[in-house]
Image (cartoon, rainbow, N blue to C red; front, top):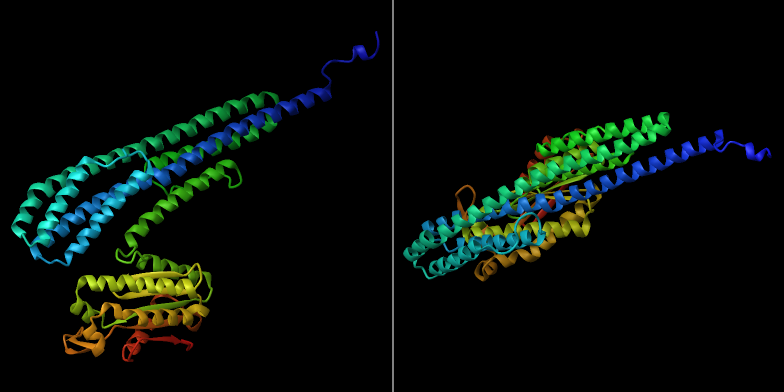
Length: 444
């Protein structure tokens, strides 16, 4: 018998090779199973944000529009003010648009137009026709006998759908946790098989996966309880870290969405005080020079008294569009346009953009503001009215004052110092005729 025939079938080198091949095989299988679970969890998290939570917000918007219509309807019937009709029609349009957006989501909520919505819209059409005809008693009877019951039924249906959507989201979060646990168990089983062949290497891998899965289970339970900001202690470089970042991004998006809805000005949809202060604080902490533009309309109260609430609202919304357009043309992509309230706006941009932005705003404003005046007032260039102090005088056409404060000119940059300097400059600007802007280039 030759020497080759006595050679052992499994040499040491072959055992090592087989051991490494088995370790690689089970490692690849474990990784494939984990990645598959991560992919499914990522898709579920995206659906939660883009469909489930969005559908819930739309349902809550429907409830808000219905309640707002009820309030406007009562005010209309009491005050008999036809200027409220446009607001009521706008709310009805928002209601229909929100319902269509809800159907387009294709989420957990039942699609299709609700019979109660058709009954409510029909009742509203009949009631509004009576209001336009000045038949107030008949309109009140229609509101009480037709509109109010249909609205109550529609509110009950919306409330039922909200409850169903919330229950569905809770179930999804519970299923999310169960799927994470299933992924954990599968990965653990495959890791044990690999451990039987190459224990030293497998132990390290398994312990890492075990820690990651437990962290995700804890995070899933925290999300199920509504704590979207719960920390997830995972290694930042692995696949579970990717899912952790998806979790964190989802929670941050939900918080930002809630804050944005609460803080945004309902008329212009521009960010409000919270967003403005947050942007200022971020720029101050970053240390980069910036410019703060405080935009204010002159004699706006007298204009509102002269032309009414709706004209004032239209003017404020138009001014917001003018400021946005000027910032798009002369500012940067990261600039902020905010609406403090009333006729006060804020722009935060780079210092070099401040003057072009201010000029662009004033030029566009002066060109277009005449649309809000009657021919008689335009020809005269003023109207007689009472100013904010109750004194009757000649009120000129609306003008604009823009106070510009550059951070690099302030010795101490803070929200308080910027506010004080803007107030001082605005007081001076209001003494000047026409629309003006002022950039304080002094070192303070």
